[in-house]
Image 1 (cartoon, rainbow, N blue to C red):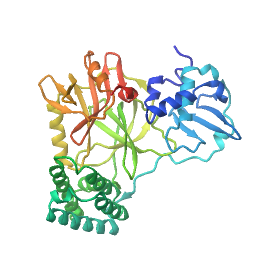
Image 2 (cartoon, one colour):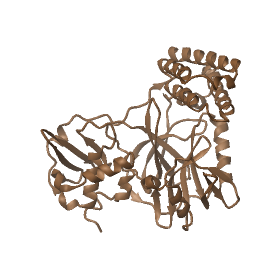
Image 3 (cartoon, rainbow, N blue to C red):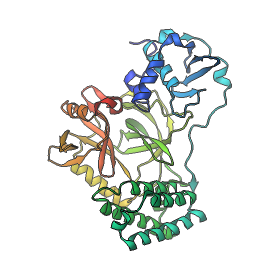
Length: 427
């Protein structure tokens, strides 16, 4: 058994999954050399160290345990930064280089940072946002009046101008959508796809016109669709939860990390979204394949999916068993049911068993025993690895369905759960 494994039970592969990208992972490993550091130490609640700089004060790094919360004095905007990740690598691989002692004063005296930036919380849209809805509806009608094929020829500045006006109306999430529409106009099917998106957006606008008459769950879904968190009392669920996957998404207005948790009592899957900021992050210990006993605050919705972690009550433990048996047909049925209840859901959790990954005409597909298929996102990592891993017994895939395509996040094999993000070079 590795020394101090009870204090820090994470493997190098699991720590790699916290890296923002492959380059970041390499730079972190490059810094994970004890002789380049000073004052490496640990206690039962913290790891710390100082990274010296020429003609500057040493960079002070600490990791709070057991939640694995990183804190660093460097100016990096990435969380965790490469100094924090390097400190974790060193303790995992060579804890003998760390001295057991009382934590230095600087670990206690630094100003405590806010854990995460909450979304703006509203009961209903404000006057500026309602004016933005009216402006957007007029713009959509003008777009349809002149024809979508004509819109294909519009310069990107046309779409960017509308997106900027939506940002001014505090509708940044809708602004991100408009920018994307302008970038995809070269695709053959662009007009058909845009018409579908405009129709869904018009339903959103009609919903806000009747906002006061809607049920609280529908009001919550409308508000969440424009990027705000409604002030509704969440449902508290106490259970054992398994971490199925972690993903990061970025738009011009925000960068999010999404952690997918499965309720082991009833099989429900929930997503926990955290803005990625240079701050403490108390969810860093929730790595793929770990299970914990805790509480979730599940947001009210027509199709409940997102939640917030209220408490982690016991020690994180490795969970090696598969969690479900689902075909592509059964999964698509669940997507249709959820979409009927909340048409603004943009991401769905995917759990599939007994599927394989194949390449066909330069496209990658998931196919099950019944012959049903789902396309994979072309830039998904580890596609060839996934094709090989699907041959393992007890294989199960977890990922996200985004715009009709699957983005694989993790797999289960006879060896347990594996985060696919560590296989960035295998695409």
